[in-house]
Image (cartoon, rainbow, N blue to C red; front, side, top):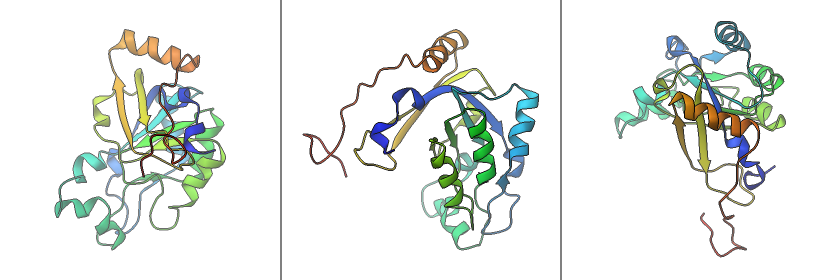
Length: 206
């Protein structure tokens, strides 16, 4: 389905932050460290099983370290594409399938793309798309969140026919309020208050 048809409750849930900082620059130049299912399963053994209503966030601190004004900002994407530096850590298609089997439909990471370099840049997103997943890329400041318990929301523009959108992400970390919001999201008690943006409507945006 296209972006405007994603149910609004899917844009929020309980943040489950999987820490992969130790692997941030572990790959060869021009390649990404591949986040396999075993990393997700190890997180589950340490914390709790994943289930529908969770939002899996892969924390590598990649954007915290490399998202900078140019020319230093070349390190975020361009030097990895030129095979001068390692790419961002990202999940494999098998990881997407495993996460999907838990009922999770929403993900995020602080790297440049969900797709790993060099050969899985399309395969991983396709694996998630087949399962009805949505995700955010280029997140940042994931270190401000606990491993579980924070309420996470991504707030995208509603482009008709769109395959993606610019997104502002936020989290509520105060435990009592976060728990109430997480419960509302899991119960689908969420209202969509955004108009659709399209050439056939009064407002559009390219």
